[in-house]
Length: 385
Image 1 (cartoon, rainbow, N blue to C red):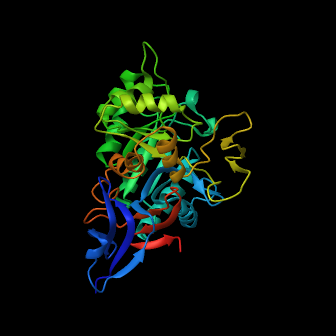
Image 2 (cartoon, one colour):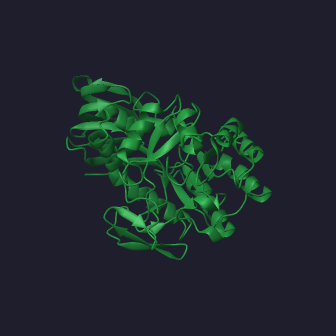
Image 3 (tube, rainbow, N blue to C red):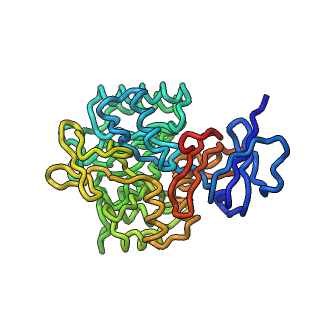
């Protein structure tokens, strides 16, 4: 027998438009539609969601949460902790992200991801393997001793894992990965993102033609826009097929630079929000370890001892508020940057990122102050009373 319910709110954003004094109808975890409150069918269980209801947020770069880093303990339990740690901040679909590590840790992470997908773990969308095939010159907080070129075994392992999870994304640098390898990965359905690289615009375009479709944390750990060389930052903004993740905390990218990029972005691919969150999310940790190195948490920053930024002390609702309140983006557009646009970037826009018929009933209830008061995955409340 089908399970049918209604989630009512002062207003509901479906990803395109707002509906006043309305209810989201859910059947067996999928959206049936949005109706006026007065048109809720008789006999349907109604749950109140307060001021507003919006599509669930999607975060394609989450390194940790709840006090854990994926690198430290790459198993199913850690994936569950990381996914759950994001739910109080409205994130309903997560790509837990492995920062450059050993072959053994990478293999364990992939195995854990396959098992999490088999279990249909709430919030788990797939994996993001950020490295180890990066450029030493743009390593950021990645351990230089672990960065290496992609070989045939690496390529084969990724291709073999892809059918076992909804999304598999990998960040690579042209310095360590050949264009023909990118083509093989993309042809297998793997999302290939360019990042941690000093690549030229011309090479980035070549890799885009081979199948790369994304740039990792725009402006960070990449070749910048110059007067004679646009670099990867320029390619990500100018090439229409490239989407790009943006860490909107005012630390990783200056607000003026954000505005320039957002105005200049050549679509249809979009700039979307990522948190690059670390173990600190959902905790009061002041420091933690990554590959044997201490990362300090001070004044909203996460840094290595030498001051290098190491991920972000950021959650998704804070990134949305920053886009709306500081950058001045229309609120619905800020929501799309955290829901529809990341869904599009990884080919999930037919089931995630909107509150429309047939989509997963992943939603976030917000107060008028734009705080998260409830989170829903597949029509079930996973956070909030």
